[in-house]
Image (cartoon, rainbow, N blue to C red; front, side, top):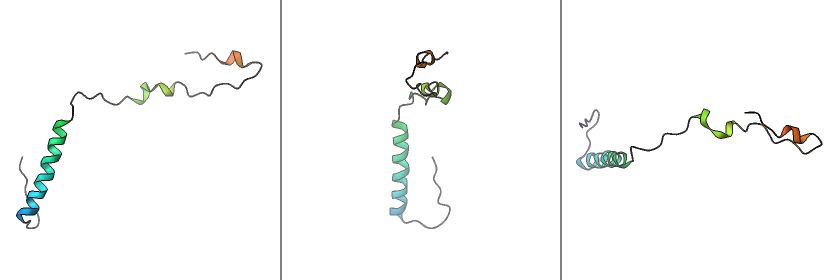
Length: 69
């Protein structure tokens, strides 16, 4: 990896601080497990199936409790 100073004239201390941050970020990225499970797609979210509200109690509410699927 090559880092080039495009503008300005950093002191050795400033350059060392910037390189320390870059190396720390690279080490943190390398430490992350690569086999992490990808996020679930919106179409696979179970909450999208239950978009209707539960029927209110009443004389005919028993017939509205079945959700065809």
